[in-house]
Amino acid sequence: MNNKMKIVVIGGSGLIGSKVVTNLRQRGHEVVAASPSTGVNTLTGAGLAEALAGAQVVVDVANSPSFEDKPALEFFETSGRNLLAAEKTAGVRHHVALSVVGTDRLLGSGPGSLSGYFRAKMAQENLIKASGILFTIVHATQFFEFVKNIAQSATDGSTVRLSPVLMQPMVSDDVAAAVADVALGEPMNAMVEVAGPDKIRQDELVRQFLTATGDPRKVVTDSNAGYYGIEVNDQSLVPSDNPRLGPTHFAEWLSRTTTQKTATEGKAAKVVALFLCGIVFAALSLRDAAADDSSTDKSKVAATTEPKEAKVTPLLSKDLTNLPGKEGLMLMVEYPPGSSDPIHRHNAHGFIYVLEGSIVMQVRSGKEVTLTPGQTFYEGPEDVHIVGRNASETKAAKFVVFFVKDKGAPVLVPAK
Image (cartoon, rainbow, N blue to C red; front, side, top):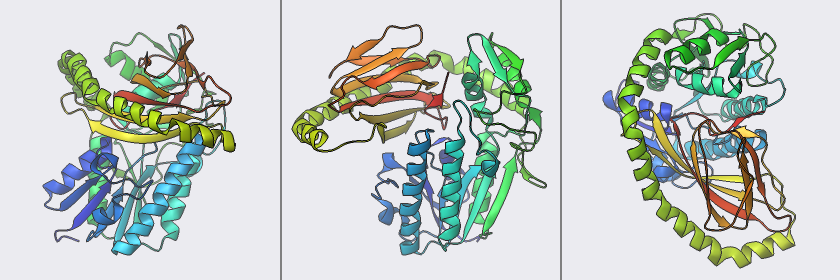
């Protein structure tokens, strides 16, 4: 497939997607960066037919906004079915999907486990295999950019407790290059693995990262710590024989990243302020819309028994181009009566604006507060969110939350 093609990248504004789009455009192809922010929503199907018209290849690098078991499964199944159905109608010849090395081996359980997320990824892969569309699934190892999140998930006070399990992480640039190469090749109807050039143990990986970034936390090696609550061994997180290897070494990336961080920290406050000024008007509009619909919503609550899980709807994702490595994410969260969140952290700056009902919020070492429409709440990257719930057992609550976070990083990480 060396001729010019139309290629649609689902999740084209994210950490990997934006790099894949740039890579393919530089090679002379017509590329559509598809995401809710560009009018293409795989959860609702909106804009899919128009985006896929005339496309030969679809690259799916979209990720669930939640790592919780049920929302992640709903995201990948709903998105996958809608996307694959639209591809059949459009006559797409090659479906490329990004997944995780070891997905089929990370299905255990434990406190704060992400095994439900990996089961959701397996469900996505099974949908692809059963679709009848020619495909290639790219399994990548963990990204260098996610090392900070690994540290955060294992932090207790000033200690980071991690397993010495073997890893072979890679930089997102090399992941994107591999995905782009696969997209331009012939469908394999199989899975290919990509990884970094070096194997390293998880505790040492994070220890090097904390040292390079001047983080005073101490890494403690614990063979029973697992990986995000999942029991692992030295085969769990590394590829099998003969993976495609990216050229970028961790030490090289770490040196480059710490230099860039020093140069850009001065811009952070200005960019965040501009971002929030631009989207606060959206929150005010949503509040007014919620007020108009409140009578309808209340009648629905009274007439039905709603699930206790919060409903999370992505509204906007925006690359913060003046702040390299950062993105803004806007979500709508709807709490059914009596709904509550598990203890978690976001590793991001989070700004909450209440639209309807009342919610109770608290971060560790902070006071519990009850918020009503028009009130706000903030939590920082280091905060652990220990209380998040609907204050009412009979009425729904609704709020918007704005995150300023690392590009492509998970929006929610379970915490103790």
